[in-house]
Image (cartoon, rainbow, N blue to C red; front, side):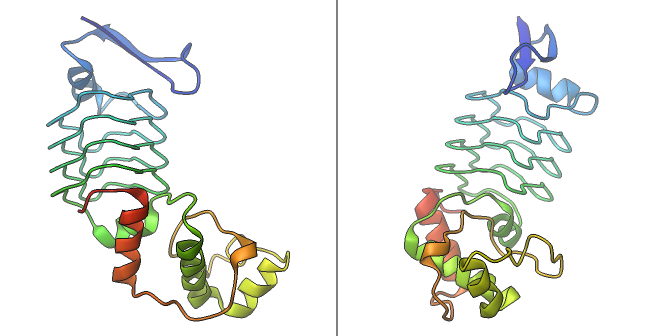
Length: 201
């Protein structure tokens, strides 16, 4: 059958087109020679796919089935995996910087958990969790800089590379109140999973 994979932002831009058994077959056969960045792959059936080292930066994989897939060392930066099923998937060494995984299922998935929580795009969260994460930000840059930022000052993290952010989320200046974080990091991880409706790792 003919398989055509296009750019998610412009379907006139064809990434690859040819005769393959399936989208899975196409990706597996071309993962080392074709860059699938920004590919439109929503709802794709990729269970047990071998996609180690594949380049899928910015790809749209919303609702895709990736159960048991091998994505070790794959580049998934800024990828959209909302509602995707990654049960039993192997993501060791995969890059997920600012990837979106709302409502994704990651039961028994193999990955670096700490790196996962600190790199994915959490987006807009509840007021309570937003304040909590801003207070965790303040443990890095200090309450003084956070307060100045909340009063329309410069973002402490925008220019100073000495301050690596712990989490990527949508801040809210109006919620800022100085104070220590109330949750441990483990409790923060649990709260993130609950809010994003991600099934437990």
